[in-house]
Amino acid sequence: MITISASLPDMTKAFSDVPNGPKLVKLVLSFPGLFIALSAIVAGMFIDKFGRLRLLGISLVLYALGGVSGYWLDNLYLILAGRAVLGVSVGISMTIVTTLVADYYQGKSRQKFAGLQIAVMSIGGIVFITLGGILADISWRAPFLIYFFSLLILPFCYLYLKEPKRDLKAQESQTGIKSPAIIWFVFINVMLMWILFFIIPIQIPFYLKDLGVEKNSMIGLAIASSTFFSAVAAFSYSRIKDKFSFHQIFALGYFLMAVAFAFIAAGHSYFMVMLGMLFAGLGMGIMIPNANIWVMQLAPPEIRGREIGRLTTFWFLGQFLSPLLLLPFLDYFSQSQLYFVISGILIALSLVFMGVYYMNSRKAQLE
Image (tube, rainbow, N blue to C red):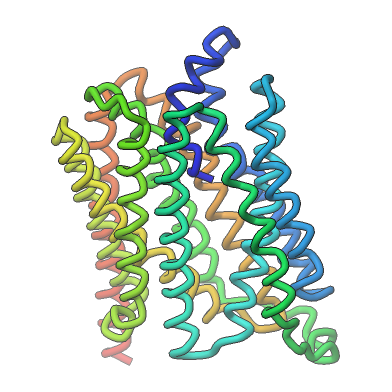
């Protein structure tokens, strides 16, 4: 969704005559998150009942149609409608793909593949965000064409993906099955994680413009560098998980994110922002697969799709809420001050997770 991030400043100029145009343009980036959140939880229930692959092809076609629509549309509200269609498609496809990872793999192999999944997503982000920055120098509309890529993936999905076998009798006999209550703690934490992180792709383009960075390609490169280091961290997730608990990994991830926001706030230069992107990428690169694996481990197979749908819902609800909750603070703080405040919140979260880890360790020793 952040493929078009580098286009936001030029989009703001193009729709400057629209009432509340600047705020609506920023919403273009986060708006799909609301519809991902709404569609994912429904998709999770449907795929548990009817299977994983039936909806996948439809979602990929919708992705192309909704994503590319911004290239042709001249009305900002219609562009937002297209982004809503994009969000529905992502909510369906992402829930299906993550559930398939849990279906196909178990134990250590699942742990490795979950890290690989996020790493490949990050590599795709590097390519498309950088390309989006280059295309944004041609026209703010051009990056929307990148969403056609989903149609190239479509035939390979049906060539190489197989519907997992399901025990329908076992599912029917366990309709009252539930996940442990701690899974809601993971969901809420994921939402909070994205609320704090997603201010980067939304606001960094404007921050860099204020610092004198005029080329959209350089803005795209800055955001893509975060995705690159996210891939590096995600590739290493399995080895990290062998040594640390879920709580410890979240503590480390939040600490790295705190360092990232501190660099961005204090730097006032393109180089320091790039350093911030490095640490932000490393933090998110370990926290995303950590959340996925934790939910896969907690969710019973019979309701796995539903629980992963909920995870996707909280994930993108955080992205949607991020500008709504954080951008109003720019009426009272400078961008640098806001990043410092977020850094402090992230340090507090890191300490909370370390505290919970030590409490659990002490409790286990006493038992």
